[in-house]
Length: 214
Image (cartoon, rainbow, N blue to C red; front, side):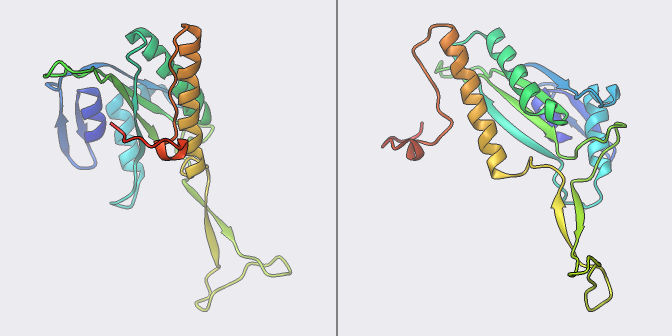
């Protein structure tokens, strides 16, 4: 809840912790919004309702509640172009897969007058939503079977199983795909505007460049 409040510059109350997070005086927040997949209840358009539901759904005190991404916007594009590009990317890569996405656009002022650093934050839900709008499971049990197809018990008499993720959202390959797709979206926009500039989601090392990141 505190992370959502900080990113959106809002005052939110966590019923799970009984605490208020107030970032209404935080500067640099341009806009924030929540994007829902079609089967998500509309009550989750309210930020406090959404993240209270997420917090209260988890049983383990150290459970991870959300995926979080910080993505740079491009100084070569207008603010409106950046925001449109961000919404399209989030819709295609996250919301269309069943995630609820909480977006916040930031453009903090540089005190030293340096290069602006516009960016946007995305927090997405980790649990898939069931068709009826209820929260699904992060993992399911895949029971171990013997050669006759019967479940195998351990020495205590309990059925043995492997915990299998219900989505691929946690996979490193999925993160790599998202990074690649963002770079592709930005470069397509650059090309449309006739700009002779491109970005690459790979590190300098992976690109074979002997440069130091700035």
